[in-house]
Image (cartoon, one colour):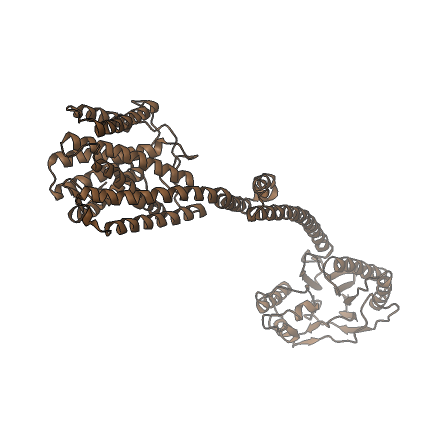
Amino acid sequence: MIFCSLIYILIAVPFRYFFPILYVSELRPASALPPVFGMLFGPWGALGAAIGNMVADIIAGYPPEIYILGFIAQFFYGYISYKLWYGLKITDKITPPRINNVKSLIKFIIVILIASTVMSILLGLLLESLNIANIASPSTLMFEFNNFDFSMILGVLIINLANFYNIKMYKPKKSKKTYFSPKLSDISLILATIIGISYAIYSLFMPPISNNYIITLIVYILVFIYLLRPITEKIEDKISFIKISLTEKIISFFLIIGAIMATLTGIVAFYTDPTSISNTSEFWGIIYINISVVLIIFYIMSVLFLWYIEKNITTPIESISEITDDYTNDDDNIENSEKIISEIKKFTEDKGEIGILANSLEKMIINLENYMEKLRKVTSEKERINTELDIAKKIQESILPNKFPAFPNKVEFDVYAMSKSAEKVGGDFYDFFLIDENHLAIVIADVSDKGIPAALFMMIAKTLIKSNLLNENTPDEAFFNANNQLCEDNDQNMFVTAWMGVLEIDTGKFTFVNAGHNPPILKDNEKSVWLKSSPGFVLGSIKDIKYLQNKITLKPGDRLLLYTDGVTEAINNKEEFFGEKRLIETFDKKGDSQIKEVLDSIKDDIDLFAGDIDQFDDITMLILEYKKE
């Protein structure tokens, strides 16, 4: 309220000094403020404008009867506009003032036209009652033009700025208790207008009525009854974030053009030889008429043009934009787009660009829905495959010995192993088992491929190697037989590198054979060395390959580390390999620890070396420690 009063005073006072028209009136741009403040801030805005008007009248030196009755008239002016805005249901929804479509623009024009007319009647009757001017005089018509013109020039811009800067507005509540019905209130305003206009027409041809104050009192009472009109419609909330639509931008552009045209018209009229017009009131009346004619013509043409633009261009574009936004932000619409397509079809019959846009959007949605359906099938199939791979991984892990200590009743040796696949399942494997009570077999192998094919080939190779050894074959014979069996029906030309050794537990004699695999590392009490031998050919490629056996004798405390190439070929972000040198250094450094700690330490060093580089090959290691004295 205080803010509204100050704004009114700052605008009204300068014009009262520099542009007087009557001794109780002046050029009044401030006339745009009461209806706008009333619509924006309700009764508090109307009251603030009325107080500002009264203070400006007092500063200008107007008599008390003028500024008191002027206070009442200005309050009525602002409050009527407020009631009209929330009482007229021209738009689909009643919201706080916002000119964002043609209907709201028409509503604003109607509100200002009615409020300006009622205000001019109230002021005309007031001036006639005080014997200052007749209600049918040019002064009354000038009040009408002044209020209408400045409201259309400044008022619309103020409302748009208030929305643009998201100024908090007064939102009335729906009335629970009413003193008058809405229809009675509307009728009272209509009667007040009819009585005022009729009396003005009567005064043009007949002498003034001596007791015209009775008519003035009746009109004021009827207007007051309208001010008590209840709010019967639900008022929609003003959204906290104002999205300026395309329609609103175009309307704002036209409003600015109209304000500029009206202002220029007034300036041109002001400087057009005023010497021929001796009466100041008549002079300003002509200026107002010129401005009003320009505004009326401009707004009639603008409303028609904007109506066409809104109906055929901006509303379809905004509707399609909202449909697209809802579609892209709602997963349900992507999965079920029938409703969206039905909304788009409202625009597909258009022969212009809107129709092309709508048809393109419809095709895009249909294609996207088909893609989503295919994607769902692919995703479902992928999930099924992942589930099966998880099961395959568990099966593969279960066939590798994974309980440690592996032979708790055997104190002559200890064995530990680990394997980590680069994918769900892998082609590396290890194995250790007792052939009999005095012979332990250890195996490590690496299939040429990865994934499911390698996993299947690995399971076959593991089974064949073990079964051949258990059939009392020597290591070289086991590899020979397993190789021939793997070559059968090997249409994929897969192969496996393998290293196998058999320990005679009571003597420490160790017989081993290599089928193209990395040589293991042997650590005794002094140092670690590569246990090299002539590598034979890989398993599964060529039949009837002979494999050479090698023999050594393990001493108590000796340790043998078997590994696959995923260990030495682990890579870091500098594209460096972990390498054999780092492996043997790590093995030497941790060689006296428990064998599990040794393998864990090697794996930790590999992970630290690789950093954030993904593992690209399977990593498998096995360590055997001979303990027998």
